[in-house]
Image (tube, rainbow, N blue to C red; front, side):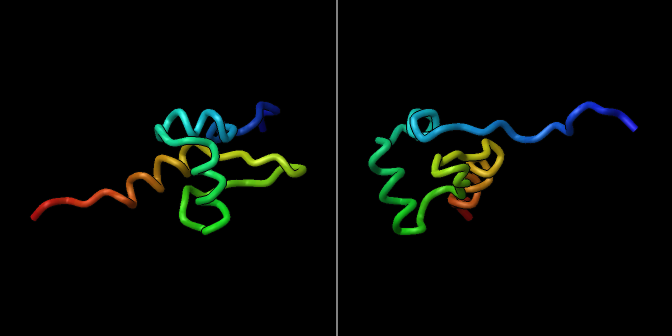
Length: 66
């Protein structure tokens, strides 16, 4: 068995996610409070987002035209 850590999705901070989504950090904060935005983690009081979770959340918002 290898001692190397398993590859996981990178963790992003609120600023990085806000830039990615082109919204303000206060919008992200409001989405967290309203349980509307991408899934997030709280690590010792610090908010982090998994990149793959943000991408999955964005995909869930996609609307295909018939």
